[in-house]
Length: 136
Image 1: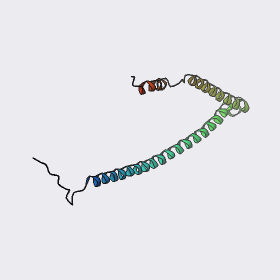
Image 2: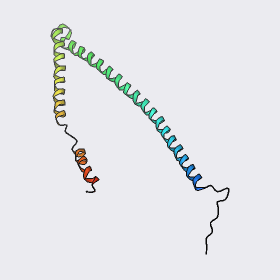
Image 3: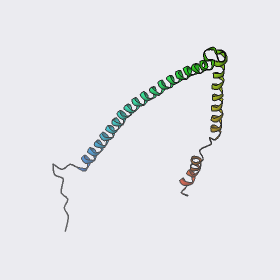
Image 4: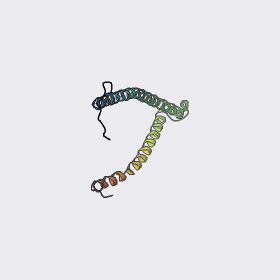
C-alpha cells in the first residue's frame, strides 16, 4: 500500500499562505486591541481628571468654609461686645487651630516612624539567585 502524494488543488490554499494570513490577522487583531485600549484609557483619564478637579474645587470651598467658621467662632467668643475683646477671640481661635495642627503633626510622625523596608520583597529578591541556579 503505497500512499501517493497529491499536489494541492488550485482552490486550496498552501501552508505558506495560511501562515501568512494568520500572522496578518493576528497583527490586525493586536493593533485593534491596542486602539481599543487607548480609547478606553482616554475616557478613563477624562473622567479621572474631571473627578480630580471636582475634589480640588471641594477642597477650596472647604478651606473657605473653615475660614468663615473661624471668623464666626471669634465673633461668638466676642459675643457682641459682652465677651472677650475681639483680638483675644481671634487669638483663641488661632491657638486652637495651632493645637490641632500640632496634634496632627505628632500623629503623622508616629505613623511615619512605623514605616519600614519591604521585607517580603527583599526576601524574595534574595531567593532569585538560588532559583536561577536551580535550587528551590
